[in-house]
Structure formats: structure tokens, C-alpha cells
Length: 483
Image 1 (cartoon, rainbow, N blue to C red):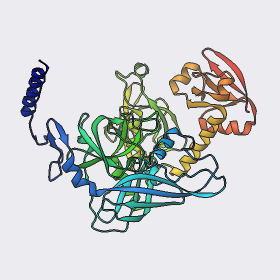
Image 2: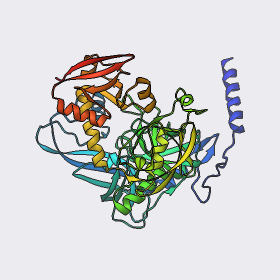
Image 3: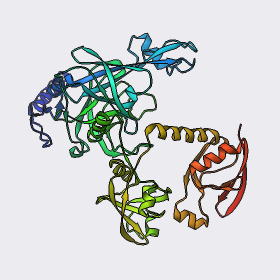
Image 4: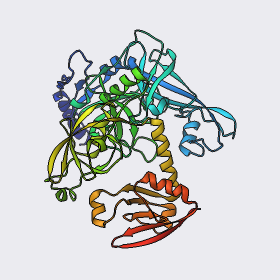
């Protein structure tokens, strides 16, 4: 009886297999001209031919950085996963970390991936792969040749870097169009996860134009392609063998792949690459406004039928926005005719412009739209921005506060000028009784108007000071003492 059942099942399986198409050509219309398309076999893409053709342009990148050991800066110290890899001989993503010896210079090693974009040796990768001081970068090709590379430039705002090797007639990748790709399409990544060179993983596009915290210039491509440490900087290919993104980040609670990865769209990366090659840095326009998203709750009070645009919460003095006549409470609807639906879209639109560019802004004010013209300033250098960011982090470390200025409507409702809304609270501030939603009005009787000015007041105040806050309809003083 059992033999008959098994025989019938086997026969059915053979019939079903025979009904499957042996090979179906790719139906995608995008970039079909002489690109190495992946065939469809038995309903699933076969990446074998594609990988064979594009792999020579994918490189392994290793970085040696000379640093002073601080004694506890080894990120793998005490890590059971690292011990597991070491015992079974699996290459580590941080092979340069020896036992800690405080004060002794040592070499920290890192790995990543990249891909060749010109036959004379320009390679694209991530800024976090090759960034840092005292670094020596080595690029290894698929044919095992190795070259010392020069870092041409890095852009931390987009996490894009360009390095150059001294070689000619190199294989190059084909550049695709991420805007024509669709959610649900198959994609493949090639890189060096955990040091395993030229590893291929595949999946689908999960979402497009994904916004990540503290990332204002990149509309990330989200995929479910397996990306792990060492994949960073490698290419994301569509089914036609064209690069549509640079694998950059993963969402993980363990340090390994958990089904969500993010890639920088290649059109964003190529714009950055062109500026880095020509100027060694990236120049971006600056408007000089603090903005926030327009919520469904706020839209009716501004006379909008639907939430759209970027709400201006504050205008910096002597900025391009101030010279153009912008005011707090304005809503930016368009930049040079391009619609702005969310606040991050305004940041990208302005960042894509060059300093000195004249732009037309369509704004919403007092229930009607109007046009303004602004001449953009230059966004401060990354070093200056990092310095300011570091100072802000220092303040948060001291107090545990995350602050933003009140917008004009919020200030009008409270009957105040200036003021900072507490969006997050921890540490000293939480122990002092401050809460999210409180509004800081003054510090030691000095009115506060911006996070930067509040930070300066904190630095001058010493270890003891008092904050005047508004909580609901009540005002009260909260004493703070720093440890």
C-alpha cells in the first residue's frame, strides 16, 4: 500500500515538474539593451550567468588603520559570537583586533566591498568602510590582483566614498536606473560578508524611498537581500545586471542579517562621486530653516485639505530663507516646480542644488500659496557639522534631553516667544522630574530660543541651574544638578 502511495506521489511530482517552463526570458523592459539579464528557470530567477558577467567588476576592500589602543576599545572583546567564529576558523570581520594592550599603537583591520565604475581605476564604496585617519586601503580584484588605493574623497552625509587604484582596462559595472525599479522585483548583491569574498545573495526590493533616522539626503532602497558585515559598499544588481544601489546598512539586533537591509540609490551615489572626483568634496545648497512634517492634525489649522509640504518651524537670521522673506509657519509646497510632500524631501531638494543657485519656492501662508525666490548659501562642511553634532551629543550626555524649537502655532497657543519642546528625556533630566512634552522657557531666568543657544547657557551655568518650564497650563521651576 505504502509503495503504491509513494509511487503515485513520485509520478505526480514528475508530471508537475514537466509542466514547469524550463526557461522563460526576462520580461523587464528597463535597460534591456545588451545587459546580462538573469534567466527565469522553473518560476525563479537564475543569477548564474548574470553573476559570471558582473563579478569581475566587484572588488574586496581591506583597510588597515593605525590607532592608539585605549585598553577597552576592542568591539569584539568578550563577544561569544566572536569566540565561536575563532574556534571554528571562520574569518572575522575585524581580524586586526588583538588582545588589548593600553597605550601601545596597533593596527585595526576592517573589510568591505566595492565596485569599479571606470576602466582607469575609480571604485565606489561606503564612507564608513574607508573613512578615518591613518588608513591604508587595499583593493583586491576577482583575478586576485591587489592594489594600494588612494582615497579620493568621502561624503559621510550619504555614506559614499571614492577610491582610486593605479590600473587600466579594468572591467566596469553597468549603471542602472533605481527610479524605474519596482517594489517586489528581484535583486542580487555581491560582496565579502565576514571576509568571504565574492559571495552572492539575492532577494527582492521591499520598499523604496525609505527614510531612516538621522539620514536626510538618501531615499534608501530597502531589500530582504542578506547583507552582513563585509558586504558594505558592494553593488546591488537588478535582473539586467545593472547596479541600482550600494549596500550600506542593515537593521539588526544581533549584528547579523535579520531580513532588512538598505542600499543607497546609485543615482544619488553617482552625483556624489562626480563631485568627489572633481572637487574632492561635495557642495550642497543651504536654505537655513528648521522644518517638520505636516501632520493630519495640523493641516486643517493651516487651511490645507490634506497634509503635505514641509512646515517651517524657525528661520535662521541672515540665511537664504530670511533674505527671501520666509517666516515661521510657512509651508514649502514646491521647489523649482517639484512637489514637496514631506520635510525630508525639502532637505534633499535643497541639498541637490549648488551654493549660489537661485531657486523658486512655492509656499503656503495665510491660507493661500505664493512664490518666493531664494539664493542658496553653502551647507557647512562635514567637519563643522560633526563638531556641532558632537557638542549636541555632549549636552545630551550631560542632561539627557532631546529638544526642538516650538513652531509658530505651538508658541501662539502657549502665549510665548521662543521656547524648546522636550521630545525625549533620560538621565539627569529624567531624575530631576522633566517629562516629554514639557516646554523649557528659560535657564536661570535667561529666555531660550534654540537648542544651540540652550547648550551655550548650560555650558556657562556650571553644575547647578534652574529651568523654567511650562507643563500644560502651569509653569514651574525645576532645579538641575549635574553629577
